[in-house]
Length: 349
Length: 255
Image 1 (cartoon, rainbow over the protein chains, first blue to last red):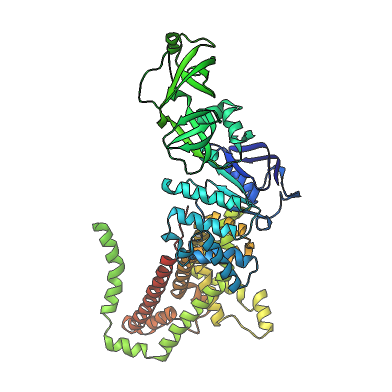
Image 2 (image 1 turned 90 degrees about the vertical axis):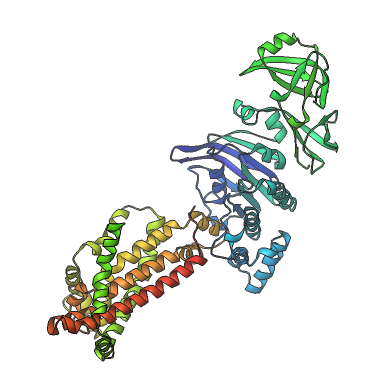
């Protein structure tokens, strides 16, 4: 278990304020925040590269606040990977193994084994400047895993990777996690957080504003910032059924556009994309439900309406629309939204 | 364009004029003379030795300056640059005062039967004194260009700070350092002012050329000067080539 207790740190104009966090063993923990929120500093603090002004870092019951970088059982992979440019891939992977005292032959054997596991055996003799972003990512991960860290810290691991490769790297990270390594993953991308996290901590302007499961954080955002950060009011647990249709919250079938690679995940729908009408009209929308108005209240740019269609769905409409529809609590209304507005984000249990 | 050409001409014309004015016979005759070859060897060895010895002091200090903030850092930087701005004969006087028989160091050396004055070691010291800023500044710039992140990652990969220096910082800054090494070495070889004060004999080539010029005139001194310039050029070009080749292999990508 890793605990950050009352951490504060001032760095020029920026400061981290009173951060308290505890991360359980084997957890996939995502720290989510916009750039400049202090996520990376937090990671570097766990790795020992930055010392807090106030507070303690406790790893497995031991206070490591002032333990040197090389004596902590955490591995860090930076956004730019920092694969040593003057060494081949093999030498990069050998680097930690030799530092840990392995004999040369044994180190080479171990390095090759790790490389096989991570599918980079064919890259061992290459120099880093000949590798793609995805390949560098794998090399950096392999090199760090070779130190057998208790905690793996990832700083924006998908930010420098081609979008085509993102799914592949996500799969790789899940696999690493399944092997029993605790992962602390920093990102600005909420889809990445939703897709990978067992627990999410949202950080904003140096302060931790909410911690919980993805569902807790997105469904019940504790602050305006989180709500606006994602803009997602409709967030459901889903099981992929067939042909771009998923069963949502075990009660409603919803069409979406992207094929699911995993059977379980989350469905996301922006409240602006939900259309309300008095009666059912035939349009191109595949998702059409009759529901009951539960509640409506003003929000920044209009009115937010909550409708029960078997699940609670939130629509965002204008004052004019409210009048035209004659909205009242308990009134029946038709809800429709295009399948292309619904996003399925895989997330295994 | 025209002004640039003029500048190049200013550098190239006297040198090529001198080379063209030297007949092949007189050139061959001169380089066959023992005193010429000896002086050239002495010049190369003293400059190389001085550069090598002071590398061990300059490189760690350059790393310290590149990576750490400490009070008086600017003063240290200014002190290292001093030899560039003081007249070299004055530098020679300073060195001589430092190593002469009357000085503490001179006396200590004397007690074990070693005399600095007139010794190749004194020549090497004088050469190094005036040329050390070239190596030091290049090494510091080289270390500054190494992304600190590589060093942090190396520590995270369980390397000791000592090992990080030798396996990450030094190799990644090596191109700059070697470049500075060559500059210091070349500058040391061409030093006259400081060396002539601490050791007229044994004669390094710049002093030999001066001696021949004042004793026998321009025509007599010219072939020796040409021979020395050619040797310096060969060294310079070969070492530059080695550094460039190395640079191709270890490209530091500053982030």
